[in-house]
Length: 259
View (cartoon, rainbow, N blue to C red):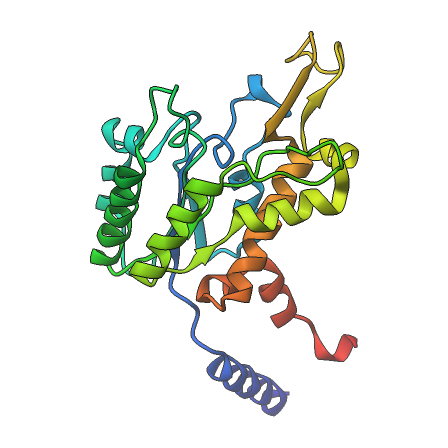
């Protein structure tokens, strides 16, 4: 009996020693606008894609969503929302940066001219790297817009290209969410794509008694589909963050005897 117990202890020790060391915990900061942000209950079913995105990762990742409704790169800085992120960064962390919806509209008080927009993106990148963290730039997610022939229309052409230019210049990972989300919308078509957005008939939801037709903000399904696009891009670019998903952990713990 003692020999058997000792053998089991030895096998357990060998198995433990053979395991790869656990990855150190990191924080993934999300900075951006309403398409990414955490929503208050009064806004449901409107959902930012950062909300389901936080559930994709294992216990070594903490997703800290700092995105805020209506913000541009400029207003995010002016309201002192960026500096706390920069000060909290630690080596190994990530910052996913997605602005543009509010920067690009000249009639909005959050408007950021192209040169300033790119300068602020460069600042985010430089200050993230100064803390040995990884910046990731995202083009703004597409709005739902189709022409009479059912072809999806570009709604962020200028500001999405500004992001791509900074990514190339600074050699920063780029998740081209504008491109990817347009493909998703085109696959679904003008009618089915409404199922991803905050479209409600009058009386359908108590938060919107008069109904809602919103081609910018997602419902829960749309937010999850966009979050899946982001994760797919992280994997396609082989960023180490993609190796910390719940699915990876589950696959690693499957009992081989159960197959």
